[in-house]
Length: 298
Image 1 (cartoon, rainbow, N blue to C red):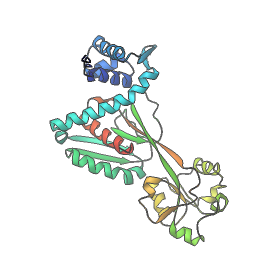
Image 2: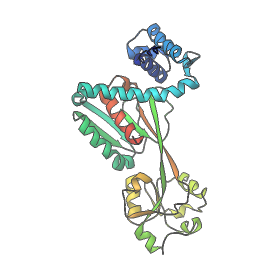
Image 3: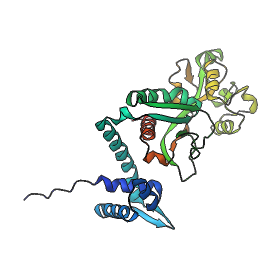
Image 4: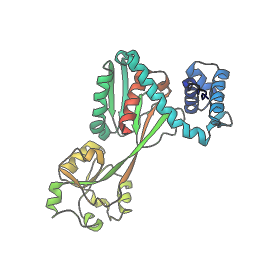
């Protein structure tokens, strides 16, 4: 007896779900997909019927994802990004994409972590013109001060699309020269507390976070402070003090070593943020996909 063939998966239904989930309402998703709201609603309902689960529940005038919807969302995003890349590659349109895209990120990420993705973007879409705004202050995506932002805090604006990446890990580092001058690596947190530190901004947050891990630092422990992460890291590499750095960046500097590696790593959250034009602008989608792939470890 022959087993009936399962119908081919309908990508249009999954796309309808994906855009509705990201927009939060059928009306907003329908405008982006250029569909009528009833048509879009039927596609979402058909997907729910096909899967046998409820994907949305109505909360006031908006839609909220159910647990099943949340589980499906990440898979739908991955499929959407893959489908977009396949479509562009198959048609040769990546080469044809042109225009300007502004990306803002911290000075450290801009200097040390973005170059590989910029190289890949240049190869994939040579017609793109990229402006990198290296700043540690938040840029307003909604006012188009930037098209894409790499941030360490989650935006609270529901009009933006924010993709959380795996947390980066930061630890305490010092130059090998400083370690040698201090007679070798510190034995424990108390010994390290006597070393000079390089601070980032005149803020107690970093100092108090380290003290919570067993150090006993005072404001006098930071004879050098800079609000520029590149400059602060240069001072650490030059042997002027101990500083915190993302592990991926520290690995690029053979002249430094981790001090007290047994201390818990400092988690650094990462969000890639853009505006709703992500759904309609090929050039923004290409840059967004490359950045998220890089930060996601793909």
